[in-house]
Length: 146
Image 1 (cartoon, rainbow, N blue to C red):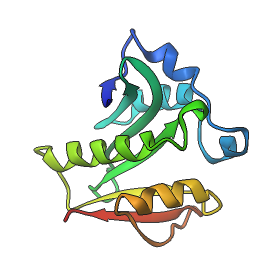
Image 2 (cartoon, helix red, strand yellow; image 1 turned 180 degrees about the vertical axis):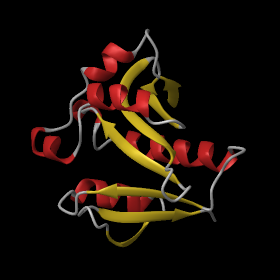
Image 3 (spheres, one colour; image 1 turned 90 degrees about the vertical axis):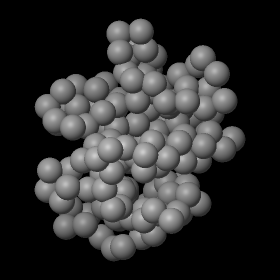
Image 4 (cartoon, one colour; image 1 turned 60 degrees about the vertical axis):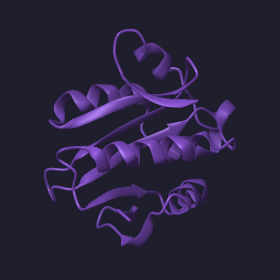
């Protein structure tokens, strides 16, 4: 069973030891950097992705001050747990939680490297639609609630 838990003193070290596949490393910042960065991003949150009681992934999301939409800034599954449907389950759970939030926005946005085919397939499989390249070079995708 997949769940999302706040990052706290009981799980932050497990999160920083998670690793993506070597060929994916260039696509995202480290979890340690993200845990530090979120301290300076009001309204953003980090979560550990949990399988039963094991930390298998990490995510960071919140309302972007530029456009007032929810953005998923980081999303990763440890290399040992990729390809098993856990990423899709965690993303669906995150979408449900954002949709149920009191401060929900009309859409959820995500950006990713256009060379990251695994991310593209995952995000498309849960309902994100590509909308073009951002000025900073990432592919942008938008999730609109059904």
